[in-house]
Length: 87
Image 1: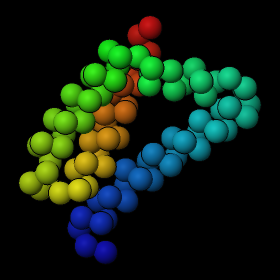
Image 2: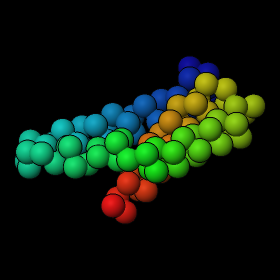
Image 3: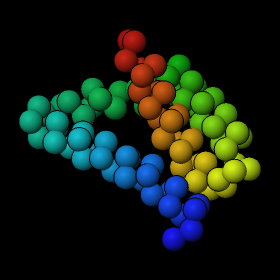
């Protein structure tokens, strides 16, 4: 694996861990996944996540290429999640 493929692995593992965490929480507390992912319906949270994702992609593209897009999607989703928690 080269540098770009290796740096793609970390955000994919993090996303997988977050999805597994959500699944276990849903098993323990039915309905918790809907609450956890409610930020996806919040326009303000999604706009903030989009701005962060575009910014990270623009900054990192020259260094990382497609790995910057993977990191951008992860940081955008985490930002949207944090912004969506305010409501």
